[in-house]
Amino acid sequence: KAGVTQTPRYLIKTRGQQVTLSCSPISGHRSVSWYQQTPGQGLQFLFEYFSETQRNKGNFPGRFSGRQFSNSRSEMNVSTLELGDSALYLCASSLWGGPLDTQYFGPGTRLTVL
Amino acid sequence: AQSVAQPEDQVNVAEGNPLTVKCTYSVSGNPYLFWYVQYPNRGLQFLLKYITGDNLVKGSYGFEAEFNKSQTSFHLKKPSALVSDSALYFCAVRPHTGGFKTIFGAGTRLFVKA
Image 1 (cartoon, chains in turn red, yellow):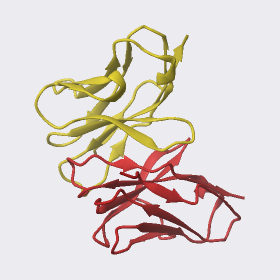
Image 2 (image 1 turned 180 degrees about the vertical axis):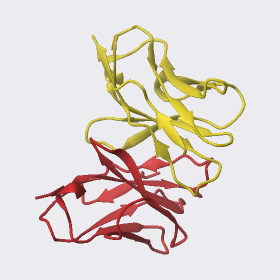
Image 3 (image 1 turned 90 degrees about the horizontal axis):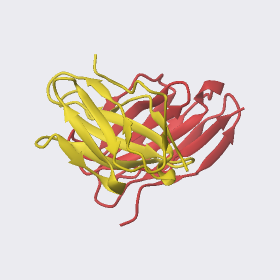
């Protein structure tokens, strides 16, 4: 079974631009979560989607948004990029997203904001 | 507040020696606990999880973890470390309630010296 895939793997943007990151979950997984990883803040939860609905959101500004499609693929969008948005963005999928589920992570998208 | 603590930023161990990476948690109710490993420029890989039952959980690559409810700890262990075990290790908790998100510790970098 193919793992979680994320595209692109690397992105370089400038302040003020917007960016869209994509995540394809493991086949059959319906829950997709997004995390931001930085050296200073560690892994921080962004949001979780299940059946095209956002079920939970972390403490990030409204510039961070996401969506999920009917095939469970998910995208996240960051508008008006700031230098502090430079990070590794990780996507994780699981069957149902419940507390017992194991999450499987993609390789991440490394975003650099100049 | 629900949280996970990894008290050591770094653990150094000689190849062939046993290793322990510490984790303590603070959640309401019974926790679901996970360990993940991250290699450079990669996403997180699932190692093992504790749901209920035996306090000693066995996982991938010879790792195991011991759940201790009275000490609210979930330490990761391996009887004999390998140089290839050198990586960043994350302890995580998924509370029974709180909406489909995972709370990660700050991570512990493990160095195994040949």
